Amino acid sequence: MSPPMVTAAEPDPSGPSIRLWNPNAAALWSLLFSPAFGAFLHAGNWSVLGDQRRAKQSMVWFYTSIAIIVAIVVLPMPEAIGDKAGRLIGMGLLLAWYFSMGKQQIELVKEMFPNGSYRKRSWLPPLAIGAASVAGLIGLVVGVELLGPGASPEMVATALAEDVKPSIEKEWKKIPDLAGASVNRVTLRPVGDSISKFSGQVDATIHGQSMHFPIVVTFDSKAGTMGWEIGEGSK
View 1 (spheres, rainbow, N blue to C red):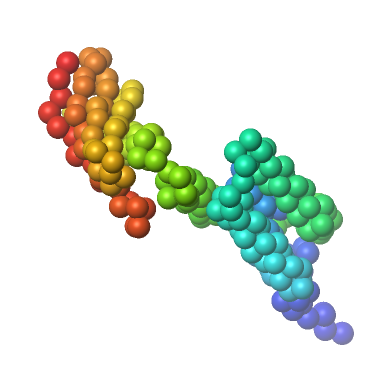
View 2 (cartoon, rainbow, N blue to C red; view 1 turned 45 degrees about the vertical axis):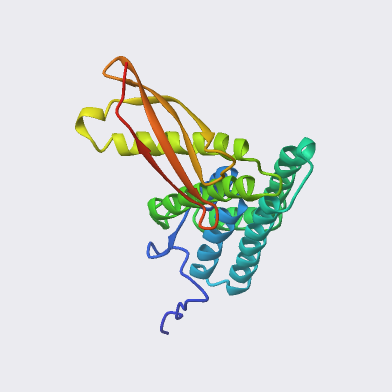
């Protein structure tokens, strides 16, 4: 009698050809990257395991999570409860996904591969995408704050000062003589009543010495982009 055929819908549990992301690790990383991260990776695992129904359900969780996160950022909410409500909604979403879908896969994989005999998929691509998504979300938050109703030139200046600081340090690291420099503070003020042009000062430490540089920052509110130019420094 010939051995039974193993199809894509019925993966061989004993075979090392199965390549999965560790579902438990995916759930833990979701604490940082939101349940969208875990749901997406679990969807890929479900497909490899041959369960297309659960793969589709996980993708529904993925898209739902993205939609809720964007809504939390974009929709206006009273300042006094905004941050707290956002955290509660995010944690509730994570727990709902974990106990309705995530835990199922963790237990199934543990049962199918008691010794972790499946091949481990690389974490570098999903973690890189997760980090980029968080950076994009932060940019969205900043954009909403800058472009939201009632944003004064002073508010825009304060937000841009925080945003331009890491940008300067990033560019300085490309210059050998400034690789060890650090930006201590950036102060900006609007030029007139403009929300597109700002001037101010950069306080930095270079080779152990305190330096001060004049800076001009331009901001394109439609594109959500900024540019800056630093003048000659002084001690």
